[in-house]
Length: 463
Image (cartoon, rainbow, N blue to C red; front, side, top):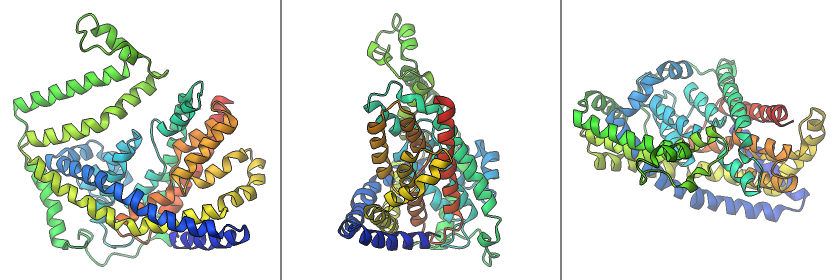
């Protein structure tokens, strides 16, 4: 399906651009986005990928990924029945979902790409998406998260009376989108058009990658699992160190989430540890404060606790981190062609005026069913471009006011939907999958449900 959509975007961009005298803008945008795909997306991703894949390697070697996968095994086995319960892919997907829920974008993408690589190792048909991949990406495109931080920041910057008011509606809308994504994926995989022929080679074979052999890749994966399983338990002093470190982060959590209560409790006993009075002017909602505290501490926690735990289990942390980080360069380079293809097509279509044309054509029908027409450009842009959607949302807030129904609907939509085409291009591109099967329809279903749920919940809550 991506073949036809990509071709349609390219051809329509030229046709619409010719009819609207925007051909020069279309051409300029194609070169601009091609450069941005490499310089502003792929290259910055190299360092981030190297960091998080190095940390992931430590978590694997120390047995943390396997431990996390076992903790949520029933849910993951139901969602991904084709993935062995003890496979590293389970832990990778869980870490990615956790990072997405907390709004940790810089960590979520590298962890997600790592999960795709783990899933590809189980793929008996290289180049074709498996059911697990499609379901996993459908969940990713549902953009499930607790705090829509970017949308709240836009509302706050425009002096909204209560910028966090959209937190509740966003959680409800994104939950509906996630449920719709799973239902759509599970339903579509049963259709004859998306069924795969029987496998003629063993499913347990690893995928051949540039510079790797199947045997080496399979042995490496087995060695990671075996080493994690045979590590010695922590000594009493190791448990004491981890306990002290955990207590320190627990203190930091209460310091950020409940600054007033902690200041009153510790102020008289330990003045040096009590939060300053200025820190008590936090967000108006206790729930928002708690989630914000978790979001701020999550990355420092993983970057320190994972290496410390691995070191206490006698893993050679520096060497393992470097080995894991090497994978970041390979992944970033591999996705460049896919980024160029999708970003150029989306940029050309937008520069030609395609989004505006679709908005004008659909406005009467949307108004007839009660959908606010001012939101249409943003809704149509959302699956294509995150930065473009953010710009349109900022314009809506300035035009209608930060506390208007339109702005709150727009913020909820932004927080409960995802740039589906970009996500599919990057994630599938990282493992060389070209036949995406039903991943795109399932992702678009999640987007549509997220948009509809956003409008309905906003009308119920704010109307």
